[in-house]
Length: 169
Image (tube, rainbow, N blue to C red; front, side, top):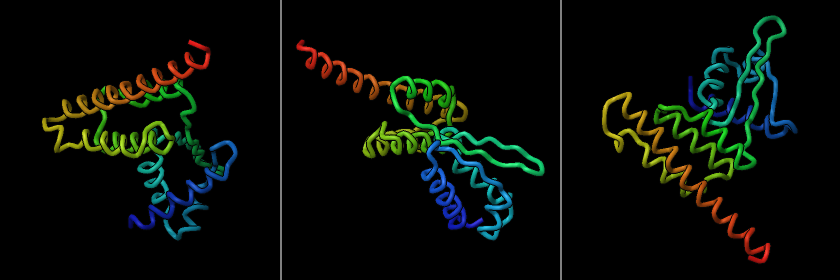
């Protein structure tokens, strides 16, 4: 499948989600496939590779006559959402691709700056984390978690100091 077609399908779905008030849409694979002149399995490919959990999406599928695919864009609105995201989406091991997609999602959500995302992505590359699998994927998960906790802790400290000054401290 051409990346160009996958990019177009991804953009189409993301635009639909952006237009939705609930950050959620329901689509039928066959209808989207007809729009793009492809087979439904190509829609599955895009959903699997571009709308994964580490990218901040939940994809639910119901097969059958009236079957649909529900795509929900998760948002990280406050600190507790970030902690939930880290504990649920970042397991003990993570591949380079999954790590990159997670970092991209955190940049999209404004949790990380583009610069922080670039630095983190550079640090988790397979040629930097030399070693054998699965140790490399374990190390990558620990690095991402440590970097995010460090950045998050720094943000919390800034907010606490700001609130303390507002209260006359």
